[in-house]
Image (tube, rainbow, N blue to C red; front, side, top):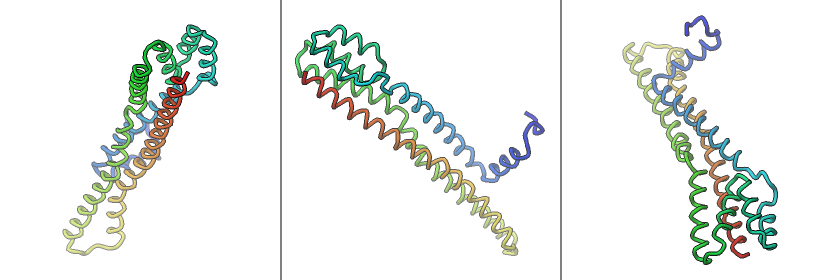
Length: 209
């Protein structure tokens, strides 16, 4: 796309970005990956939200009334991890308690792995982007002081300040990516832990029927 298609502000932002040096590009790539993972996880958790209230209570009532087939049909008709676990429990209701516990625990672990997927990537990005930014700042400072040495120390404060702020761009950019990424990571981790606790409590209560 020709430069004329960009506005003045876009060109200034791009020039500002380039002043940060070559390490701005891997940090930018990390930001794209982070946003992609966050949006995908938000969609995943949005789809998993309970769409029918009191699923466990309604399922228990149907089972206590001897309507196991109706309870199974009800659980299979509702999407989400909780009704999925309940449907598995109803399928295996005639097996031994030990076997039911193993099968439900295995299904729960599989669901947790699905919701925990890619979260490690967020943790990695949140940890390495500040380091990439710091590395960019260090290399920028080295170049600035090498330039001062070439000039024999004859440099005014404005030139020195300009080299320093350009070197600090990568640290600022890295931190601006790392902070929201780590916030999102801990938020999703909390959601996964909460989901695991809900499924564990639900399974315990279900097996007591």
